[in-house]
Image 1 (tube, helix red, strand yellow):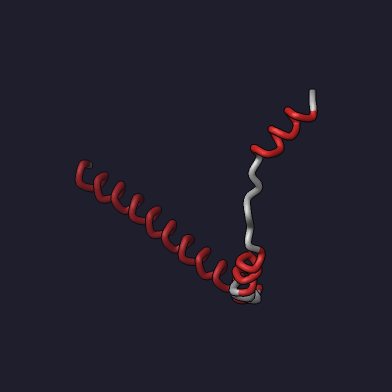
Image 2 (cartoon, helix red, strand yellow; image 1 turned 45 degrees about the horizontal axis):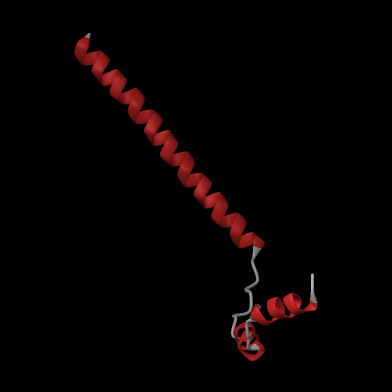
Length: 75
């Protein structure tokens, strides 16, 4: 490979111009991370599990009640 072809290829390559000040500004404007309270998360999990358990109990009871009523009507 000759130096002329190397010079031609290096002249064709463009380097992108990046403004580093813009990147620094974006980093500084980010909000600080909030601390997470584990007790509060555990409480939310417990409440959601109670709601799910109640919902499942209501669904199962309604299915059995429907089967009982249909059995009473048919029989």
